[in-house]
Length: 246
RNA sequence: CGUUCACAGCCGAUG
Image (tube, rainbow, N blue to C red):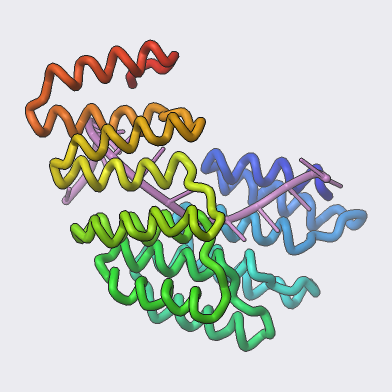
């Protein structure tokens, strides 16, 4: 069964959801093998990522008849799918279903909500959830912080984002390449290039290697600001770090 | 640690 699960996951990741569904049918026909929650979750997630939400829901509905219970991963994938489509009422219906089934929402669930709200410009709502997490002891993790900081940067609240960025360290959360990427992008978009470059140095002091995304962000920011000369230098630095431009 | 969920850039595609 793990063999099937791995194959199905691989197909889903490559966007070959139909092939994955075919393999799933074979799996179901094989009386030796009983599909578990993991394979349902993998397929539901694959369908959501391909914008095939109604099929995902159908598969979700079929789980109980096969004696498999949905878990947090199942709900999170569906909620993520609905949020990405802006189907907030559906998302909140499944959020309710989740808790109604005795499955408490997780940090991942709340991070999905925060991230999606921020990307839809509903940053204040997201921030309320974020603050509520801290109050209630459902501690935001690095990804939660990254999503929230990104949202704040997108509406120009750079100082607030920077405050969160600094508070991560105090909480013992280690900023990763994404954390720096979010802040660097925020500063670049506000034409605060010195601060962006400063951060890229700071991350190296921490032993984090800027990647192609980091450099592309900086180079784009420098070009937009008409600092072509500095941008070229940055490209050289990037190549000397073993990264090729794409 | 055998399998499943959430985070940053540019470009292209479609509108």
